[in-house]
Length: 427
Ligand code: GLU
Image 1: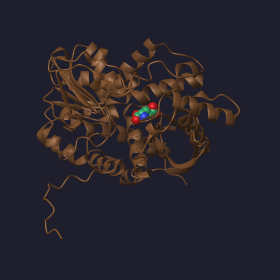
Image 2 (image 1 turned 120 degrees about the vertical axis):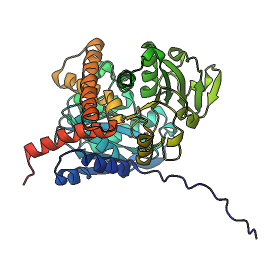
Image 3 (image 1 turned 135 degrees about the vertical axis):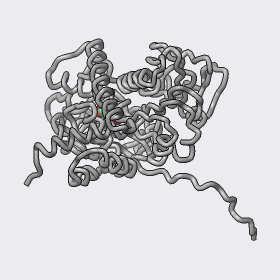
Image 4 (image 1 turned 90 degrees about the vertical axis):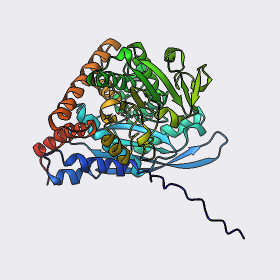
């Protein structure tokens, strides 16, 4: 029998669920804003969480049952709004935490929506197209009684896309007996989707990165950027920042990162949607791991892949001058504190990637009004909404000497609390 002792290792940070992080952020932000304790307590809990079983007939004829969720956090300002994700780690707590972030995101942007989020616990890579369609149609049917264009409006998120939304809208509409495009956003333009919706979260992330660079007195032409993730957020943000003159020196996908200190040719790299996992197939002077890309000494770091990537374990090694969150929840609460102590500003997800839900709002307006906006109109309105929100958050940063995250929460919470106070608690 071996008597060897297990090797001593540094204790790693236990990664919090999105719900724990969201609640901690809320408690912290509540100390900076004059909002009734009862409102804060209420906002720690979702209105409801629908949990459904989604049976799927596989292509080989066998049947598997998956679990789906829809968390509806708060609707004081309007219908619940937020994505549906297909990912193995989807569970009730994750959906609740993400739905809370949607409530704040819609309020920061001053959109007439509350927060929702849902999804199915499944690996989307394990699905054929036909299986994904059957799963989505059945999921739409299971959620039919809790969603609708004036109650709860889903959208794409990780593992779902415009085609997924098209199937979802079709299944819902067929059961309701009429075409109801406003039940989901992020659809293809041919069936009521908005031009510019696909690239919107990346566009807003780029706009906010551009404003942050300017705020800290730098010139975008002299700025280096590293982007983790090359899906709809990361790739579109990288492309726009390159177009606006920045040097994007590193980008990554699940397989790793490519790095060129003189700047990559971003336009030539296919996005995940155009060709999955193409990043590492490009020629570049150096390759890095996904962890290394976060620690590059760049002006701007954009984590735009998954949550919980900047943690207490690597926060001390983040060498960027500013972090702009493209993904939802990429920074843990502990890492946030370390970065703040180190003086590294973190511009939060609920502001930076809010272009997605903002163009979703434009899409919903187009759907219920039965009219179409041009791409130019969408991008001009998005630019205006992003600058308004940026200026409102910046005023809190400067006026109350807050972090960007706390300032964004203050803007959001003030609006939500005022709406709750004005409507009152009933009965
Ligand atoms: N899933 C996206 C987000 O996290 C968009 C939600 C929406 O458009 O409703 O912001």
